Length: 278
Image (cartoon, rainbow, N blue to C red; front, side, top):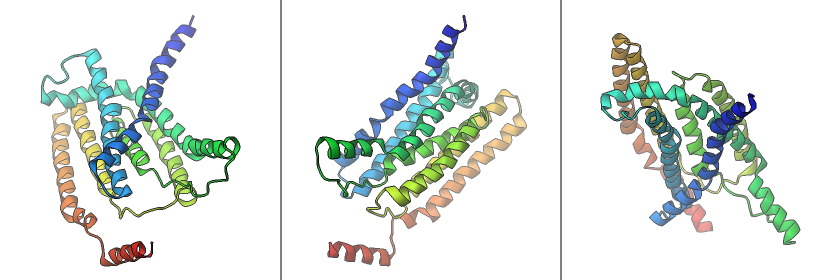
């Protein structure tokens, strides 16, 4: 008698995350195409632009669309007043925690295993060697896919920040993901991928801005939680915390961001000599 109920739970809990993951595989090539059409000269600049687009797409479609859709299904007054948004987020996120945990399992743990297997590279080499009877292609060593992996890690960081207050059950799954991710990505960067260029740390501002956004969003959710608990003192202390976080972000932008737009003369001279030798 319980089998249909368990089947419904499996379909409603696991299948949406799998379908979303299959759909997201087509996002990175499309965003890379859009970045190419924008006209950047270097391949690293195209990847950085695609990284930003994929990150915005993931944050909106994986986090906000699921939160808003869960709210719309329950109550249609989510956007009735901007003051009610923290409270509505505090109400809805616990209901979406099961989906986010499933997403970490399907997109996080599964992607790390596929990253280790290098399935596309294995298929390419198998077809080339045994079907087409061609010699082994030693030049086919891709560079690290920053535009797909960096947004994925930042999205999991966002899920960890926002769900830690209301759904802390997701934290052990994220802890396992980040531990395995450190081991897997370190091995891939050192032993698998070929370093074709140096970005000069240009991905760090993207990471910094995403972390600050995750912190501010988490603090807004905490403000909603304290509103539900009718704790004006705690809510009053949360508002200065948001202000201090934004001030810290502005300080970092003023103090550190110019360093990423100028490079030392030694690096420029070395790049010119390397280009001349080629």
